[in-house]
Image 1 (spheres, rainbow, N blue to C red):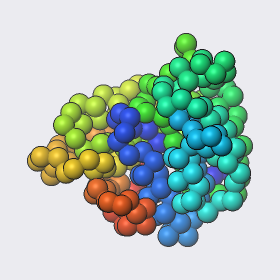
Image 2 (cartoon, rainbow, N blue to C red):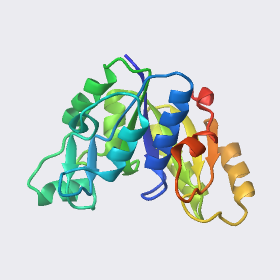
Image 3 (cartoon, rainbow, N blue to C red):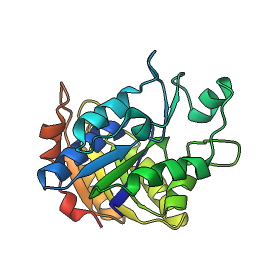
Length: 223
């Protein structure tokens, strides 16, 4: 089975998809066969396609059908459990895990599973996406949006990941907005306090270029 990581963020809008694309490009440049999964996506076009899933498909080497990459596509761009309820659909961790394992079992070396929002995003009344990572027993990559409040959000998320019995395999500092004040000092503090290696400090790129972003990452640091 391929080596798989679950990618989560300190919040919504911190650039998880951009970092996933950069990680896929970095792994591809290292000669690894790559694949990605966004098991549930809320916010899709008229064809039922989510932009994040399409971006990852463009950056991975595996030739997968859209339905394999994003098996549960929800129309409204709201929390997944709310979007599912609006459409009369039921999400469950066991089903999502089965869909992920289908891709994890393919002949790829490097597989990413992108969550939605942060660590505790609900998929139903009693389950969250954290339960999916626990069910799959995979390492976690944390994307930290480098903005005011990021230290608190990052430390709380890291604590939750460890409390759930999973390994924080690495983290990425991502500048999804303008460069924050005292960026280097905040980065140094996070390096001191987070119990995992920094995989890279990705600057804000406009327009975003996953190949250029990949040059700021070192996947060899992944635990």
